[in-house]
Image 1: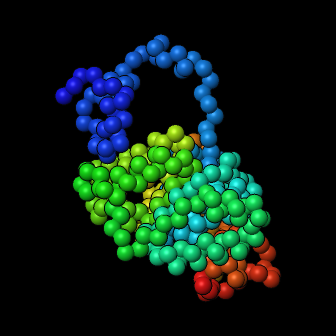
Image 2: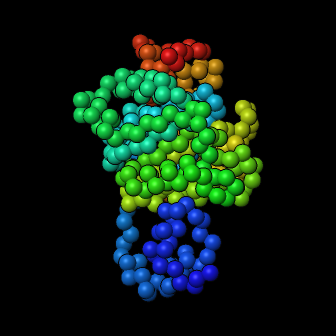
Length: 309
């Protein structure tokens, strides 16, 4: 094993998808702060993808029970970042800089992915410029029926190596992978070491020059768990929630019988305070798009069931 490894060799190892198992990482950084003059300067402000929520170059998670609206919320997030429109059309969740987005849906085929994007575009009533940004900036990939696990044990799969290469080189602003169960091996939810290895693989996707954020969708524990309203409600190994830097949650609204309502809250954040929860509603004719709740009236479903077509 070599004692000194050049930056070029480290990059070659990275591009080959080979985990570092030598002193190269330490060799690159093993120096006192006096040899890092840039540390004397004020650090750059954090680059937020969504204002005070999701940070560029970090791994985040959106959690919730099945059917709560995670995929709709993430489709809206993709369109927000691509067009500059606030997430959920909620002004405090404004986009600081629009850019390219990878939206990879592991449980949807092309027809369903088309339907979701079409419904969000229609619901948001995008301007001509926003529509142009949408079609230029979104890479939408349907992956239902496709083997897309990122790791085989501790080895990166061919799919991961391809994804990593494209992500690093394509100037992405955001990567969305939905859901975790399609991209992670089965032991990821039961073994902390496997969970940490999986999060590390996601972190590698942020290494490109554009430093994209990576958001992964995941499920919660069984309903009615007293942990569900916190970060500890995330299903599986604690290594998952410990490793990500931000966790948003879609949970039940104050009236849990009204399935047109959900509550969005931030249950873990490493870089900001916790914003107040936001109650969201699905409006008639939008499929399953989520918007800040309004008073009862035209457009609100206000029912125990809703049409997601």
